[in-house]
Amino acid sequence: MSRDWSDLIKKMPKRLAPSMAKDHPNLPVIKEEGCYYYGLDGKKYLDFTSGIAVANTGHRHPKIVQAIKEAADQLTHGPSGVIIYESILRLADELAEILPGNLDCFFFANSGTEAVEGAIKLAKYVTRRPYVVSFIGCFHGRSLGALSVTSSKSKYRKYVQPSHLTYQLPYANTAECPPGMDAETYCIEKLEKDFATLFKHQVTPEEVACVIVEPVLGEGGYIIPPKGWLHKLREICNRYQILLIFDEVQTGFGRTGEWFAAQTFGVTPDIMAIAKGIASGLPLSATVASQELMQQWPLGSHGTTFGGNPIACSVALATLAVIKEERLIENAREMGAYAVEKLQQLKAKHPLIGSIRAVGLMIGIEIVDPVTKAPDGDALIKILDIALRKGVLFYLCGNHGEVIRMVPPLTVSKEQIDEGLRLLDEAMTEFETSQVLA
Image (cartoon, rainbow, N blue to C red; front, side, top):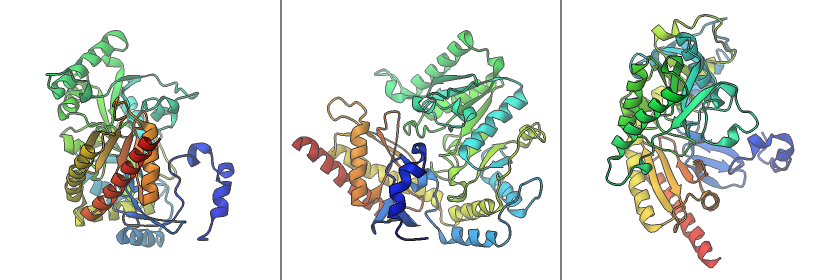
């Protein structure tokens, strides 16, 4: 492929849908390696996005590249069920060893959205109940079924309000806790009250098939709930025989410092949706449940042409091996703690930093107005643009786009964290100076 395709970039507004091509920052790159992107402009960029929590093993890890090549020599496509192949069976077997509880049976698909769709369909099918409860601020995808439980931003539903009837409750928010009250206790008591109100006024618990939740709020702002809140949610679902679904698309495969957030928080759901980091950048996902639950979902009730692609499954196996061999889960815990320590130092220096939200290497840095402390998405974009110019790539999240999303590959080193946060520090200083001069 040509190394100079700047002429094609000029055509991008005509050739690519705005919903695909207008994201931030649209950096033209020609290569990726480890924790870095190499730009068309000849510059090297430190990547603190890992493809939005996908490249957990780093970009183009040699063992991942080798797995792609070896798998392509054998099979490139295999509609599972029409044929069957070793990689999909071996992957299911190895995933069953690392997933929590009795989650050991899989429906493989291609994307996180598809995994969520499968999870909701499975729950409705086996319970014979029509309704779903989700939480305000969660992101579960943009297809109509997944969109019915997505509420991180209202723009995702604009003009395409899904017909599926769902109910949304507030997500845990320790910042709302009244002074003098324990934040975890507050969140637990509020959750119990919210469900009681829902069941009293809108829907009976006997009609609810499932509750779906992100164990850590992702696109909605990297909100980390108290452990007790998730335990209470598990208890409520048990009480009414409602299935609990964890959307671990972004939190999975070591991101939170364990294989899955379910293990980080000590709560096992009935169904999980997994994707993103599963295959180091190749499209693959899975709806996961126990054999007992999956056996109630018969042939024809769900299907796929491309799900569980043999190359993707082979790469997923290589991904699991790399995570284990290179102790990337341990590195996520260690480097996450180190990054938070450094960020606390930046917070003391820059009043535009609000809260720092972190679990493992899933880190959110809130940007606020230094005086009013209100979320400031406009300032965030300017800071990210300056940081990119200096050579480090971050992404954003939050309802107002006010949270810097820091999700480097799990291979990241102390030196790379130092480098990236030094450049972020410089970017914030430059932004603050420009505000004073203005």
